[in-house]
Length: 230
Ligand SMILES: C[S@@+](CC[C@H](N)C(=O)[O-])C[C@H]1O[C@@H](n2cnc3c(N)ncnc32)[C@H](O)[C@@H]1O
Image (cartoon, rainbow, N blue to C red; front, side, top):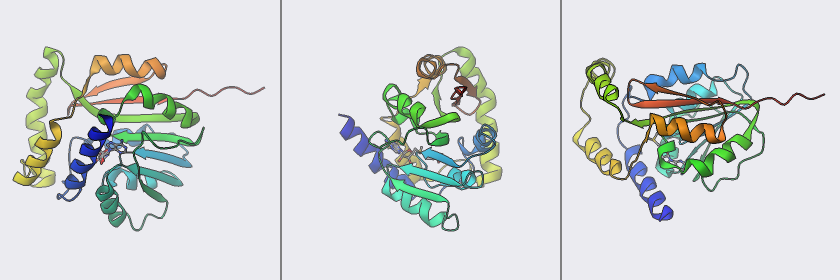
């Protein structure tokens, strides 16, 4: 079952990788917010689900090394092409659920719009173990509406999103081909609500901060505690 779903996700993103990538979207809007959450000094960062590498390039300016992983070989191919000058990014095609995490290695683990594809109960303990003491997990993902106030925020979010798309992408709607591929991909997508995220993450990551953002996203920031040595 998981195997079939993983195969579908890979096929979907192999197709999406070949589409023209918009300058602005509901994920890139939060890049600067996510960068602000990084520890001041980073030697090693892991990015899970790096896609075409737009955020990997920003991370590479903040860390000695970036390990950027994606399930889709086409995504990694495009990312490698677009990041040729960034010799400190190591791209790898891999299913993060099968990946062997090093222990206490990363200063930060970052992921954008990918965690809804992954079983968090299995993944979060591995991420926790892979972070150095003082290291941070920084996640942005899609969120499902749950209360009336969420739908009310659409009154602001929808027109604001159109304005950003018009100014930054020079178009409001995606191409017909892109809309079709994303619609097909969305058939198997399932997102957490804010309250589900607030329950799931702190079970493994004590005092994780879960925030809701305007453009249908939630973020999680968690810092691994430092154990004082005598
Ligand atoms: C919506 S895209 C987001 C890409 C990028 N983070 C961005 O913000 O543009 C989700 C990415 O997660 C990757 N992905 C999904 N499941 C994965 C898994 N099990 N292991 C590694 N990457 C995965 C997909 O291939 C896809 O490139």
